[in-house]
Length: 298
Image (cartoon, rainbow, N blue to C red):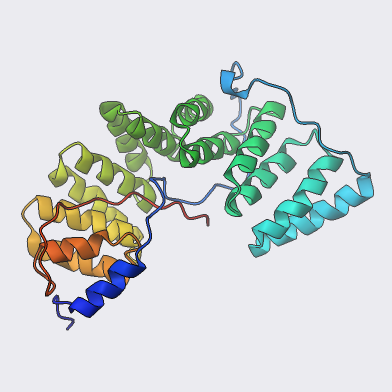
């Protein structure tokens, strides 16, 4: 059985190698596909989508067709950077195809180009505002870029198409959290968790919000659900440790902090908590720190 006591050398190696986590997210990867809601409609185009439509360089049909085929294959293989380049050519050949803009947006996001992803997703919904998932992913990208008001607008548009979309409610809750609208965020995230109880990213975000609202006892249930779904994700284990610690369950908290360290503890917060709880040879009291969900494309 592993001892909860860690050496100073171990502590140093974790602390010196720690890197900050990305800001809160949904946490889950971008959705693919374009599920159209029968009879649905997005209504008036949101103000944030106004502006001049992109005018890409036009390429011949044969080149665009070949690029589309190669881009889709590269996307399916997980080579998103290469897929993005091929899909740019495919879009140039068919600039009026909403789905091509959508897939390019996903590829750009997954390759780390959030600005380009937003531009492509905006083009997609300008061309066809009826599919659900482009709106959800536009909300997700905007949340990741820190544009909370824009994310809320896109999420609300998605909810006009499908009021029971757990993913849209999750992105709405994320935006509301950062806009300091805690009660509304809790309502949205509780509904999302109820609709998709096995989604670990949604459960983690709800638990994180409840901790921030000073309700760690209520945070335990969703964070335990998040742990069941994402047992090897460091920030989930750390957040559950915080909930346990703040409800007086120190021994269980130590177990979760140790699990977070084993899973990577990229921000070093779990290690700091172990120090504070005396589970290492070095003691330096610190406040427990929750970790936001790193956004990891899938």
